[in-house]
Length: 499
Image (cartoon, rainbow, N blue to C red; front, side, top):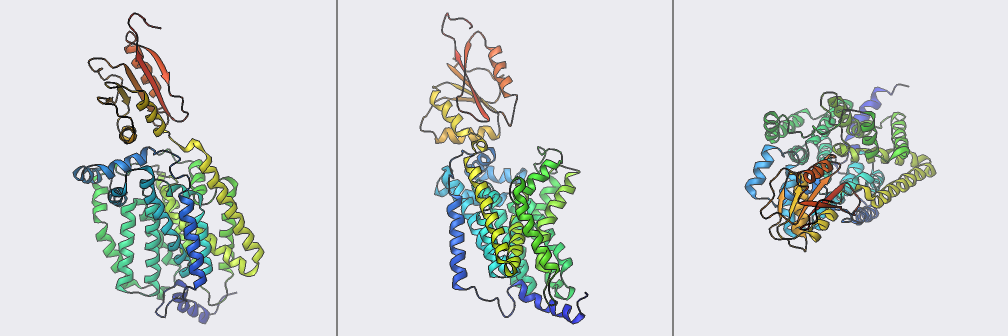
């Protein structure tokens, strides 16, 4: 049945209050809501510190630490030549490492950013729907498996997720109460999000797309043009960088577009394997109750979260037809939309069938905690650079040689070598088996390689032995399991000959 024109006008007029901060103000957050929000936020923070240093730094984290510790001139040069994507995180990490350089301190920065995202998601849910929905969304984020994993990583993903939430919050504020402050805030946080990770641009596109579902009279076009103009100015360095560095996206390593890639993106936004259907059910409920809304109710909050959830992956998949770029962690910018949409569906159905809504919420919480438990216990996610470096340092002697691929592997190895309690003076580190041996020749030569990064590194180690069969006649492999392997070559004892 068609809704009367008067009802449509009423829906447009009431949209301001549904978005949140209207000129009259939001319904105040009650003491009970504040208490629940505090408990949920504490839960998220404590949970993300569980086994925080159980795994060593991976290659990407090692690069983050390197940029945080390198000289100012080298930092600026690297950022502008190739690393502007995540530049804000690197800059903030340079400040953060003044508190310490341990794995715990370095990763704690991401934990704090991820924890701060919980109240941001709550306020988004409160503006779009109501306080109850905001609390459900915050709870879903607190136990979200992929958000948990990213929070324990020394990379920019926790930062960009927080920034796109704050940008979205100011976007909603600007629509409900247009002002210079709100739209300037939107432009600022949107730009900050892009400097945290370039894929945040897709959330801005999703914001624009959501306007297609908003009554035209409710769109403050003058303020929007002002905000977009300011945002364009703030992002001018990004545009110059991308034009001058066509290969700066650093996605050449991404495999060709496949169904497997899309599947893992879906899992990262929801839950693994068939458990993602629990989130899909909540999204379906949100859509169902939105399209069955009564006169005077606005469907735009649903379309806003749906645009945020769907537009970035759609653009990425389409772009991957030209240049593969579909990577689940890049699309973590959509996690807030995933939990907000699910929370909207759960809250709506719980109003009518409490046992159904409550049961679905408990099911998602159970699956989420189960996935987190699996991640914590899965040793296969560890690249074991820490153990491999410790093995080398424990057996190395002055004048020894380590052969390791230059670049990220060398950075991680150097981090753990410098943090090691064992000091090996005059340790020679080279990047290829063809490098000339020091004089005098070392007693031990160690090959350290990532079987994921360079599967043929074992061939390089054996090639070294073939080149020096008369001098190095024994080989030992590192006993620690994992993708990082170590081969040790010892000088033959005089008169021992070749084995």
